[in-house]
Image 1 (cartoon, rainbow, N blue to C red):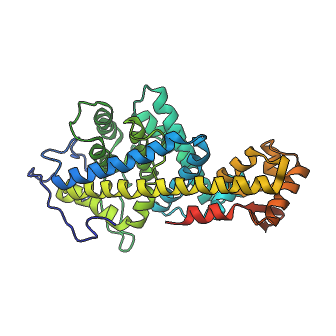
Image 2 (image 1 turned 90 degrees about the horizontal axis):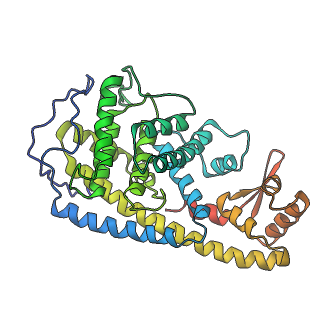
Image 3 (image 1 turned 60 degrees about the vertical axis):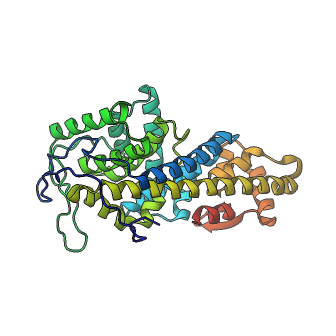
Length: 381
């Protein structure tokens, strides 16, 4: 759990003057990175070492996967679900995977979650095409993919976050487009220039995440875009081969503290506690993601043996792969993916049902065959 929840409030080592700040007026004086006077305290250095170790374990596991996209797509979809939940876009596991099975009647929330996953891959492709640079235009493409529109850098006020209970303004971000582009350009420089700061990349990631949220460049979708930037930055820095870190699960769990610590940086210049929160999140989510991937691999091996026994010579490795990419199967999906003709698909799924490998669930006219053990695994903490 977070360091601050455990009662370990670390005193900030910064001695710089607090920023000029009034929550009711646009924060155009938001300073560029890095923060003046910040140093990596002994406790931060200890947590950095621990975070690096667990990220290294996760990265090594991903590198060893024979078919990494198989499991990575599923993990990324879980990240998409939790990142959207932070913005109160809530969908159930069942609803989400039915939508991922290309069900045309998906809810608005499920469609937004799937758009988040698409945006993550769009950002990764864009960054790769731009010589591994993470630029403002990448961020714009990410938010456009999330929102499925042509929104860009906002050129109007009115995006101030408010207290959900009393409607009081919590923070008023900078305004307007010329100011925002200037601050994003400075953030670009900090992200992409290795000489911009001697600090550890994971500390820089904490700074980058705060700064993007404080700039708040879009009318909507800032939180989700900022969390995708986190994942892309870890790939850019070669700390992860794939953007698989399940970071949003931690933020969902400690959402109140997340927002309190963001405000603590803005109002009190308390970078220390914010960095500790992010490092703790990295450690816990790297461990969680590693555990989930290992469990998925064990389950996949177990299923391979069971399906071979059940289907005999008609065993299909493509079917096994699909079961771990889309836990909600249907006859039409197998036919569409050209894994089997409808009659063969129907026979296979009935045999898998009789063997207890999948469970059928009829919704309307469609019968889904659910990889229920994978769904249980994905839902566990």
